Length: 136
Image (cartoon, rainbow, N blue to C red):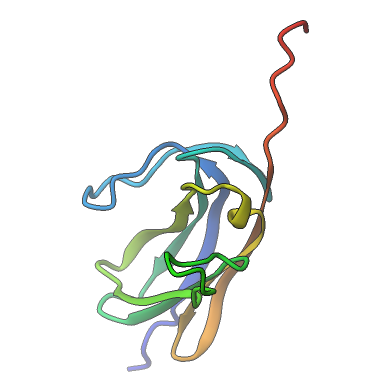
């Protein structure tokens, strides 16, 4: 019997509610967008639905702008692995903005791969927040 073909679908992307990575609940989408204002603690990323892949190992990569570590050196992209937990599984891949804001500005390339093949990819660009216009 042939193995069922794995399916991956981008469900949402953009700005999300605050996410607790220890919770089983994913963050809620607040705005579908590829451009997010860089304000402290804003959550951004994408949700991917994966079917027929329970137990498979996914590799993720968040290739960020030139973020510096505490020594001022450019950090490597954020990478890791996660195992698919069920045959109909939603996965959030994203990040939160932290201080200093300036080095977070620019494109953040988010990708998810299975067996070396990219199954989901989205670029979210963080931009400088517009000042509030108190006289509007």
